Length: 230
Length: 393
Image 1: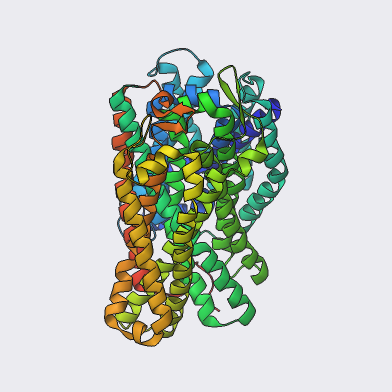
Image 2 (image 1 turned 135 degrees about the vertical axis):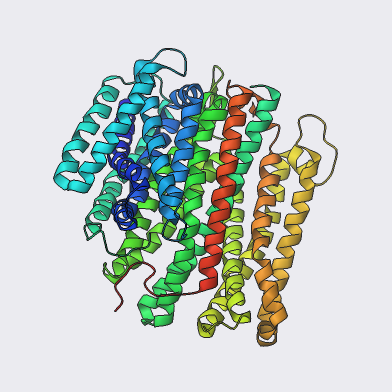
């Protein structure tokens, strides 16, 4: 059962980085350019970011529920970077959520900085876990963070260029994240009754959740210059 | 963690939980009203009902933003500052939270995205179904969070295997009275907050004599009905917990009633928020009963209308007081009688906790202040067309 839930966890985390990765990339370029250009970029990602970021929330949920030992050791070890992920996440959401409601120009630079912080911190945290070993501030994970920023920029460009390009870069992102994680299943999981409880609720819900996500993406196929709530 | 760091971590968690709670409660309070308004609009086709659905729905959405980000920080904070908790009781503690993220959080955000985008583009019945599903998932969310919280208040359904707490019975966990009493009291309190919010915003427009008189007359009556009935239920359901509390958490019960306690006990000051909460509950019930009995004279008075505007923050203050009684009253235990709070903290430095406390505090103050000012501005402006980017017919 722990294998099944590990696959579910990797699935959610991969989905998060594929879908939000492009949001980070687009967000990073929102700090400059004409107001029209920035509005267009915001409209291309804002209807979807709400549905995209919950993949990450679900991944952390499964981690907390099925693999509590990993959550507790890794997040207190990587404390500063988990905090920067959260602060970046809050700032980016606030910027996207409120930019059309506040007339201030501060939202777009905030989105750009916060998106970069998010991409770098996720890259750092995941590379650090992959490399293993002691210490917090290290070169390898820092390079991983920079690579994540570059990858997100490229992935964001692909998202704006069209579905076919997004699919291509998305597949690469998914492979880079999912394959190493699937090959390294941890041997510390919660007790069997807990895992059965989780699986009993999560597995039947998955197809419905995916259907809702697909529906949301289909509904977003529209000219990005149309006005919206965001 | 040192004693200072544990205190800082508790302050950090309390701040996150309280800010989250304020926004989550308004979500729970507004959603059913929005769903009922949209249902009645679907049935009657009346234009005012459509505008009411959109106006109150848009205020709920602006409010939802803060609920999300603070909920997110709470989820991560267990691992950051309280890693002893997943280690000691992770088998039970994390599962309901995991189910909350997937069955509720994930579904709620996706469905809400569909509802926002779906205005004017989806068939009406399907669009109506979406708002009911959003409402349902918000309440499922509250349920799973309270399953975890109920376990912390009143641990049930577990077995101790060589110092490791594992789940033995789901049934016991999902029907825990520590969860049930808290959940119904909280839901009623949230509806009180939502009802008095609607009543207060409506009263503001009526007293300022804005052009939307019919719209806000109707909203005011809905708000007072929901808020008043819910306030009465909240008070009754609050007192209904006393028998259970006396049995399950004798030290908390004794401290609440101001009696001295021997052995582990919460700080004596929790009787203060308890009394404030009861007082606020009674004030709200009296206002609602007054409005029901005197109706026209009552609601025609500018003094009363301004009073209703002033009442908006009171249910929220009562919610914070209730949180303090329930959660500080649980101390010195993180899981009542099973794990002490001091034993649950992570082995991180005081400076690390201070860094996160400062970072999150600045972010909460800025974002909550901004969100409330945006809600207030949208509420003051009143209903307007095209808010969801829908094509005007």
